[in-house]
Amino acid sequence: MQFKLIQLVGLGFTIAYAAFIVWLYATEPRTFKEVTTGAEVAAGTYEINQENFNFALSLFRREQFRAARDEWQRADPAQRDARTQFYIAYSFYRQGWGRVYFDQELFKQGVEAVNRAIALSSTSPLTIDDPDLQIHSAAELKVELEQGLEHSWSDVNPLKVLRTRK
Amino acid sequence: MTETNRSRNRALVDSVVLPFLFLTVALLGGLRISAESGTFIFVAPPLVTLLLAVLSMLLFVRGGLLRFHEWVRSDFPPLTNVAHIWMFVTIFFASAQAFNSVLPERGLFHWLFSFFFLWTLWNNQFSSFDARRLLRSLTVLFGTAFVLKYLLLASLYSSEAGWLKRLAGALLQGVTLGTLDAPTFAMATGYIAFFTLALYVAGLILLAFAVNSEPPAVTKTLVGEYRQLSAAERLAVREAILDDAGDED
Image (cartoon, rainbow over the protein chains, first blue to last red):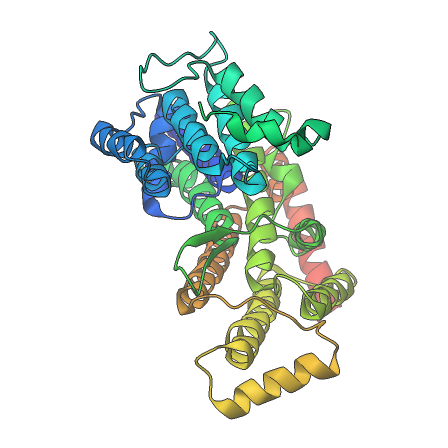
């Protein structure tokens, strides 16, 4: 009986260890911190750092977009929170928006972030109730960013300098 | 009581210790530490290492280190068979990752080392081996590759190396039109690789002890059948064996 028990426990333990190794190679964490964050995500206990999030929001409202993104990335290192990713995308939009032209690189990164936000909230459409924002849904923000990346004859319309940032 | 302890210890080694050792090798074999940022880099085993692992497994079977036919049998309980098959799987991946740890990551050296391993393992398929000789041969093989990669090549490409070494490295790069390009890793990578290979060889030695501690199944069957013979028949068998031994002398 004990012989069987040793075999069962050994098999269970080593299969779990093998699964952990496969997970490590699949996710490729770069630090021990990323290993623990990844484990929290896998276990479903992952939460963003609310303090960092609020600080980033205050920076965002003061138009310190790059600093805000840094703080949001610290708040959500695993990029698993749809709301944080939405705000990151919004910061790319606001920073990249220009009266004459849009910064293509920032808009591209914005599309990536908003896609992440949409993917993370696949169960229901993502909307953010923030009175400081003019775009409240991830789908609208995505369209706005994608339109900024498209080139058309309307780009040479001189009246476009009158448009406003959302 | 001694027999019970022996079977318990054997189960512990087969089901826990050996798979754990080999899985640790599989984990550490692809781990590198970045020289710039000190972060982890996980290098999945290249396809060629899987081929090398297959050749190693064939060598282990030929050398008597792995006895498939004795460890996976229809008269064993299913759990024992599963535990043994699982151990073989862990040995396979540990072998692949042990090769991964001593193979340069890219460039001409990657292919040179791969060729060197393939050639050696292929030649060994046609040599007569026992477990001890096989272990000695593998230790030398991995030791040589380790010295070449982590002592010789690493010092040529290291940013902390002296100007003469760096000049030799740059010349080598220039002469070979950049095909000898190799990534540089932190010193810790060498220590991890050393530990990985030591663990791998230790696992194989433990496996060899586990194999040698029990007589082969053929011997068990032979002894069992011998015990069923009559006294006269036993005498005849003993005489035949002694005659056979005399012929060999």
